[in-house]
Amino acid sequence: MVVKQTAIALAAGLIFGAGLAVSGMADPQRVQAFLDLFGAWDPTLAFVMGGAMIPMAIAWRIQRRMATPAAAGKFELPGTTGIDRRLAIGALIFGAGWGIGGLCPGPAIADLAIAPAPAAMFIAAMLAGMVVHKFAFR
Amino acid sequence: MLPGFPDAMPLQGLAGGLMIGLSAAIMLLALGRIAGVSGLAARATGLSASGAPRGIAIAFILGLPLGALLISVISDGVQTTFPISPWPLIIGGLLVGFGTRLGSGCTSGHGVCGMSRLSPRSLFATAMFMASGFVTVGLLRMGGWL
Image (cartoon, rainbow over all chains, first blue to last red; front, side, top):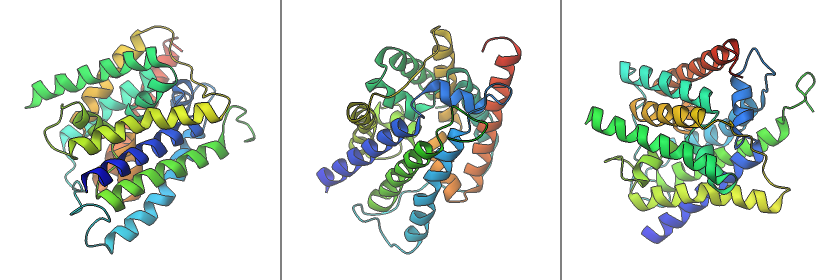
């Protein structure tokens, strides 16, 4: 079970990373250009989001009829309600960092294979930010 | 390709988006989990006490660069243009790391998985980080940083 789950997760990560590379979302400049409404706006990110919604909208419909996942004991899903101050402030801070660097966690990690030096610098800072959160809020 | 937007890649964007959605669908239907990269990265590095089993998180995270490498090898390479100065990477990285932990997710978890689930929490978070991104980049442009 564990080997099978690990293999599935590796395959899913690989498809995700490949999708980021195919879609242009591995390029920080292109992501930043989507957020740059007053510059040379690039709508590509909207197509990526739209494309990703299709399999996932179907998957959620299938999920509702499944008692357990296909290769795990049970569904472990976060709650969908409870909008609080942490969610709002966290999302605002994340969005600011996303705009400044043009990177969110997925593309940054995928870019370790494309542009290792700047990707590693961003990821080191990102992990430092996670460490700050861990000690500030636990 | 797209009238008025010479740099846009609508077809590649759609194709890559379908792959990202497929990946998230596999995580959901096979492993019963959200494909949220910030949470999985925190879990893989031991910075989160809860979440997916560590092995699953590490495997998914390792897959990301492997997938990008695969596309780079079978195509003419993957175009990336990073900021020249290290500061946007350092400041951006710090804010992304802290913000995604405080807000319990990023573009993949709240954006792809949560929005497709019509989760009120994720719809709200996505609206917030999108708005913040637009305002931040707008301010950078007004300030002459871009």
